[in-house]
Amino acid sequence: MSKDLIIGNFEVIHKGHKMLFDKTTNPMVLTFKNIPRKTDSMLFSFEQKINNIKKLTNNKIYILDLKKQNKTAGEFTNYLKKIIKPNKIIVGSDFKFGSDFKDVKYLKKYFNVTVVNKNKKYSTTKIKQKFLKTKVTFAQNDLFIKFNIEGTVVKCKQLGRKLGYHTANIYRDKELMHLPEGVYYGDCCLTINNKTKHYKASGTIRNDINNKQLIEIHIINYLLPEFYGTHISFTPTKYINKIQKAKSLDDLKKIIENNFIKIKKLTNK
Image 1 (cartoon, rainbow, N blue to C red):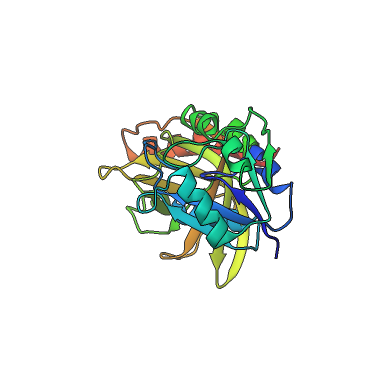
Image 2: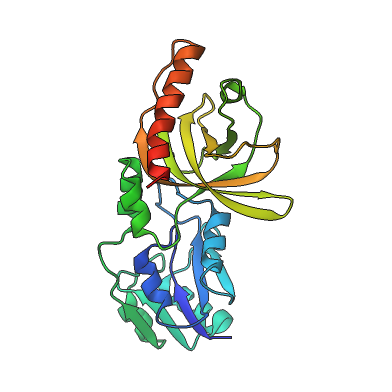
């Protein structure tokens, strides 16, 4: 196993982060939990974040919970020496560490450090802003590992089914960053009987009274079976339009049909 160590938060893994992983093979990774002064919501849950890192390495992943272990730079370097013992450390040029905010110059006093000048075009903050402005396609293009919404299918009012449009509904945790309400086009990953399949789908995202987001996923050209309790994920790739208010069931059906016409055009491209 490699003794190279990559350090970073990796809330998302964008193409700038991939440049770090391109400097080595199968590295160890040190990442963080409960970062002080971080006030904005996360795109991915912590579990998803770790799973994303695992897609880039089979080596050990170290996690520092900064709520419990907010070390000074000196304490942090001692932790690296005694616990991880890396041969080489790989970080981005903007890397800061320790409660006293030391930079890579300090780290170089104690370790062999490779500093990667990441393309400034790629930024977690900028990517999140693009999602919030419904520039979904641009945001996903900046990501090396695409953003997806995943969860367990729950039973709701089943209005779509009554109108001939079956949906699989999942909730997004209220602690995570909310996407703007609306209709999205994207890809769906569904596992039934230990078989995983990929489909084109629409996803209608709406806020509920409990400050959670409900995602109604309609798989195109596929009649959904009963699979409440099944895990499903939706990767939005394009924002279609805002949610339109329906005055009646007939009105709702027309709105759904109009949305579906737009989505079918994208599917057939």
